[in-house]
Image 1 (cartoon, rainbow, N blue to C red):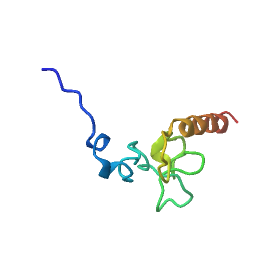
Image 2 (tube, helix red, strand yellow):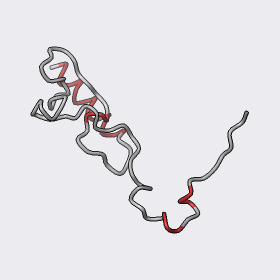
Image 3 (spheres, helix red, strand yellow):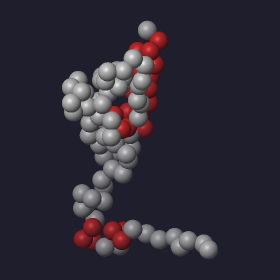
Length: 88
C-alpha cells in the first residue's frame, strides 16, 4: 500500500508560522554530553568516555545544547579534532 504525501499543518496555518516548535532541531543531540565533571557528563573534552582507557564517542550526542541548523559541520570538526588527538 502506497503512503500519501502531505504537508505539515504549519505550511498553511498562519498561527504556526513563527512558532519556536516549528524551527526546533530534530537531531539526536545531548545523550552523551561533553564536560569536565563526570557527574553531569559522559565524555571529556577529547571525547573520551570518563574513567575509560580507549573508548571515544563522536557525534551530536556529545553536544551540550542543540543549535538551529544541522549539526553536520560541527560533527566533522569534532572528528578532525579527535583524529588529531588520537594521532599525536
